[in-house]
Amino acid sequence: MKKAVVLFSGGLDSTTCLALANAQGFAVHALSFDYSQRHAAEIEAARKLAGLMGTAAHLVLKLPLGTIGGSALTSELAVPKDREAQEMASGIPVTYVPARNTVFLSLALAWAEVLGAPDIFIGVNALDYSGYPDCRPRFIAAFQAMANLAIKEAVEGHLSIKIHTPLMAMTKAEIIKTGLELGVDYSLTHSCYDPGPGGLACGHCDSCLLRKKGFAEAGVGDPTHYQD
Amino acid sequence: MKKAVVLFSGGLDSTTCLALANAQGFAVHALSFDYSQRHAAEIEAARKLAGLMGTAAHLVLKLPLGTIGGSALTSELAVPKDREAQEMASGIPVTYVPARNTVFLSLALAWAEVLGAPDIFIGVNALDYSGYPDCRPRFIAAFQAMANLAIKEAVEGHLSIKIHTPLMAMTKAEIIKTGLELGVDYSLTHSCYDPGPGGLACGHCDSCLLRKKGFAEAGVGDPTHYQD
Image (tube, rainbow over all chains, first blue to last red; front, side):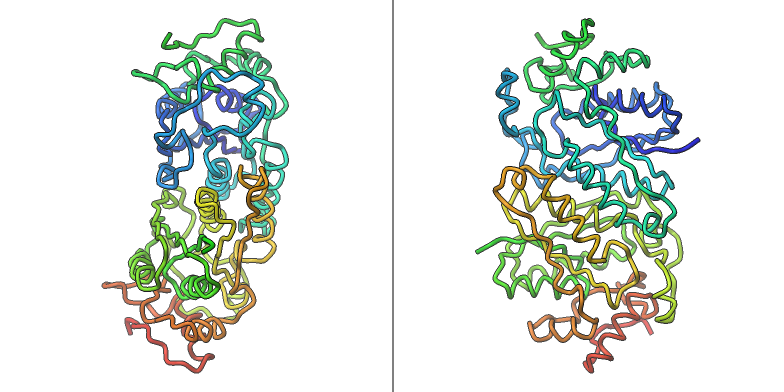
C-alpha cells in the first residue's frame, strides 16, 4: 500500500480530503497541528475521526504560530461574524494566519520524506473559501516545485513530491455530497473559528456560514450543533 | 530603519550573516529554533550573541522536528566523524534534516509578514558545505517565488519578499575574514554537531572540520575550544 501524508484539521474539507485519499487506496498518515488556534476543539475532532476512519498513523504536532501572531485565530483579535458572501469575496479577512499552509506543508514535506511517501494531500478549495492566498492553485504549484528542489530524496531522484488538492475546484455542496458517498460522518467534524463552551459552533463566523450554505445547497440536513 | 528577519543558529555562518544584515542597516529580528537538535548548545550561543550584537528582537521557537525524525541531528543515529573533503562532496550525509530550511524559512516568512519586513536573511553556503539540497541557489529562488504567492501582504502588493543569501558564493575562509572585519567574536559561535560535556566541540564532525579548514585557510587562529 502506498503511503500518503494528509493534512488534517478535523474540519469538513480536510476530513473529506482524507476520505478521498483512503478511497484512492493510500495508507493515510494524517498530520494535525496544535498551533494555538482558538478553536482547539478541532484537534479533538481530528483525533476522534482519525481513529474512526482507519488511518495508518496520526501525528499531532505543536507549533508556535501564536508567538508569531498576526491572526484573529491565534490572538485576541475578534473573529468577524455574519459577513455577506460579497464581503467574504472582497478581501482577505483577519482570520488569515500568516504563512499557515506554507508552514503546514513544510512539515508534511519533512514527514513525507521520512516515510518515503511522495503524495501529500491538502483540502484547500478556491471556490467556497475565505480568499486565503495559500489556498490557490498557483501557490500549490509553486510549493510543489520548491519541494522537489528542497529535499534529499527528491534531489537524488528517489521520489517526486506531488501535492494533491482534490477539493480545489469543488463547491462546498459538492464536497459534502462527495464525503457523504464515502461515508463521512460530518456530525464529528469541526469547522467553527470561534466555538463557545463545550466546543459548540458559533454559527456566525465565515467558516460556519460557508458550512451552512454548503449543506443547504447540497439539500442535506446539517448535523452540526450550533450555539443558537 | 528597515526590519529584516535573520535565521540565526548561533553558528559561524549565520552569525556572520547577522553581522552583514546589521552592517547593511537593517533592524535585525533574529529567529532561532529549538528543534530537538543534539547540539542544543547552539541555542545558548545564539542567545548570547543576539544580545551582544544589538538585535532588535530575538525569537527562539520550539519545533517538533525530533518527532518527525530522519536525521542524525535529531535522533540516536551516529554523527559521521573524520570524513575527507572528497567524501563530504560525494553525497548528502545522515546529518541532513528533512526539509529543515523549508520549515525554518516558512516560519521566517510568517514572522516577516507580521513585522511588515520583506527581507529575510539565511546564511546558506554552496561551497564549503555538506551538500544539503536546501542550501543551493535553485532552492532559495524557488522558495522566494513560492513565498510571494503564499502570503497576504505579498499578494495584495504591500511587500515583495526577498531571501538574502550573502554567504552563498563565499568559501569558509572568506566568510571568516568578512566576519572578523565586522567584529564578530567567533569564540562565541557554536558549529559542532555532536558536542561533548559542557558543549565542547568534538573537532571531528563535518561541521567542525569545515570550520577548522576555514580558519586555517583564512590564516587566522581558531578560537574554538575542542575536546581534544
